[in-house]
Image 1 (cartoon, rainbow, N blue to C red):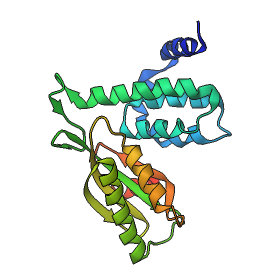
Image 2: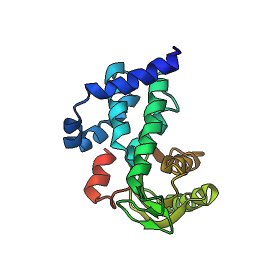
Image 3: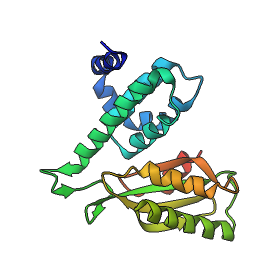
Image 4: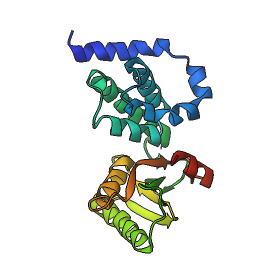
Length: 214
C-alpha cells in the first residue's frame, strides 16, 4: 500500500478517536486556536488533530486557514492536510447547498446564487491608516476583486482595519481574494498584516473584529 493510501486509511480511522460532542460544544474554541497549526513549537500530533477538527467544522474560516497552511505545511502533514482541506470544502458545500443544487444559501445570505462573506484586514503596524492609505486600500480591494471576479458589496474602513462585504461562487475560495489584496497592498510598504478575519455566518461585531486582530 502506498504512503498516500496509508495516510488516507489513518485519516478515516482517526474519526474513532474524536469526541464529536466535545467538538460540537467547543467549535469557537477550536476556531480560535486555528493559528496553532502555523507555529513551529506546536507538537505535530496536536497540529494533526486540530487540522482534522478544523476540516470537520466545515466553515469558511477553516477552509481559509487550511488553504493557507497548505502553502507551507509541515512535510509530514502535507497529505493529511490535503485530505482535510478536500473534506472541509465538501462539508462547506453540503452545508450551503439545498435539494438538488437549485438553491444556494449561507448564514450571511446570498445574491444571484453567490454566497456572502465578510473579511477584515488589519493595519500591519497597528497604527492608524492615513487618508491616502485608506484610499489606496479601498482601490486595491476593488481592483483585486475585479481581477479575480469577486463581487464587492461594501467596504468600511476604520482607523486600523478594513471590513469588506463580498460575494463568491462555490468555485472561488475567499482566501484567494484576501491574500491577493494583502500582497498588492504590501508591494511597497508593509501596510496590511498577514493575519485576517473571515466569516460567512453574520456580519462581525466590533468585539469580534477587535478580538480576532489581537
